[in-house]
Length: 219
Length: 219
Image (tube, rainbow over the protein chains, first blue to last red):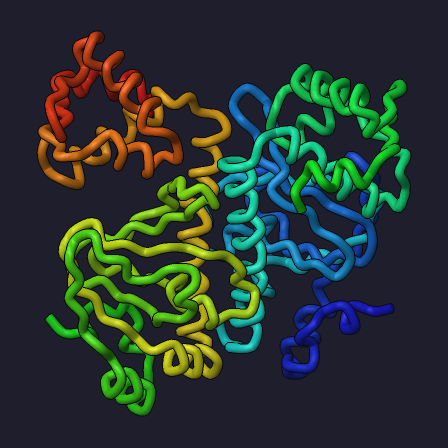
């Protein structure tokens, strides 16, 4: 599969725009755990995900993390190219959660096409609107939902992404997704275990009663 | 002052686009406290603020509120026209915080211009990026900043907006801005009073030591 099949509005580009992208596009393989972008590495370029899974998160001064959204196959990551827009004023870190293949579109190429093409600008708008909706959902979660429901929802999401009820994940990693402390997650998971919803062993959380987790998570 | 002087990219519109807007534009006066838009009233139109102050907030199922951002003179409100973009999937409420004058641009007019004009689409992009940055700032506040700092920061912001150190504001309203309960704010303000930072009386919070509030808020 080539880039043109992954880029949803390829048919709306003219020949000059297509070759500008084709001539500057970089294909990158990233290992699980690699950092593709962080706030200080200002303008890495736009990522189009060919395969794998990325995580966008923010960091506190003390090194705490919270996942803002995830990116999957065919997603386009704008915020790794934040210099593209003057008004994008925040630092985000992008990490590979699985071994991934991504295309990197240089910022100046994408920006110059976006400036002349209403189709590309509107496409970019839709992507930003979609991330915005995810972030608003996150605020609602943080503000109105208790942590037990959020942990239950996160575990269920992971079983779908990993296609397994046996999750290889540490309490620390769960805490970093949800913006809390490891100790809090450990306590919560022990409570889930006592209630017969999960079974814990070193580095693994096994979902044994997903119906109960679903009822709790209130999805 | 006319609409063309408030709309930043008026010069980039062609004659047809200008008359489409001029012929459909509505000028509205809204009283303080009026709701201009809520999630269920899907597509009210784009607001351009001529004067006054609006507040965008979300509501929990239990009726709790948190302010997402505020809009001032010359700001354009996109999310009151969320049907404009397929990917905008969240409910927001817009309320007048002061008596305000706004222009309402019908959604279908703006949308059709945005679809053909790269300039308008990119302008819209910049506005969304700017709101996105505000929302990311809010997440950082909620996640990493203790409530005393947030209350101190909010009070200082209010003194700037109201141009007065004598704030006519209830504890309930402060709670609704910050997404917490009235009782929590009351307790916090009493603590601030004991520390000599504010003076409380019925319906009023007077800032008496703004330097101490600034030091606390960590701005």
